[in-house]
Length: 302
Image (cartoon, rainbow, N blue to C red):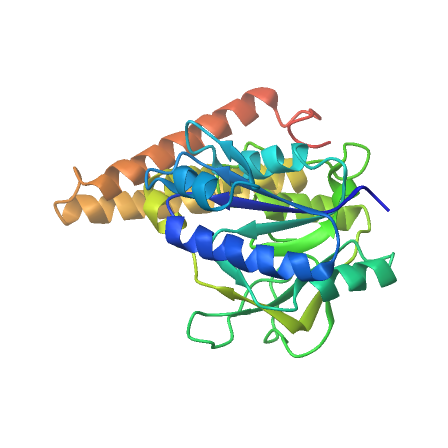
């Protein structure tokens, strides 16, 4: 057994009230497990005095303060680097409230099932209604099931506990920091799936997910990177043809959006500037990939 059993890594941006609630719920439930644990918060340059509040109310928390919003991939990697000695790691958003009696059974399940690399649990909205979330890498033609133990292939960063060793370089490694917001967990999950790692969904356990509160405050930067990230993921993990197809579809979409904004007299709006930036960033990536001719390079994961 490792000296540190559980490391909890929380990434936050301008969600002071929610992250304080989150930390309180984590601390109360982690204490009940009776295992050694460390809580790590990575603050992505919040402007709402999040860091000050955490230092005051939760002095035992390992707080990492970034001078800029570096996105979840790099922030989670910072937390993972600060928890290398842990046996298990829990990745979670700051808008999560852990319900009592959740963490202990998650740890017990992983202890009893050595072939399972990680577990996720049921999520509910703030009003108590069931919250649907993605559990697989691809499209699912059937309605998702949330009432039974199921295998999952997407190891998401919203709330997921797994073995810390998965993130070592001799296994799956850490998150690809090329992604600013979306796809860092999808990229990692595809790599894990290809290595044969297995994850499970445990419906009898749950958390409250208040829902993307930090994301809405950083919409412009996220959207500006989203289209480029789509092309990058396809090029890295699926190859030239798939990347070209996604690039062409997205180029048509972005041109249509920009044309609509121009016709609506909004060509000088923030939205128009954001979509122009997305178009330019996607084009720059496509140009660089063409220059490389989709070589078998480290960036393409070949």
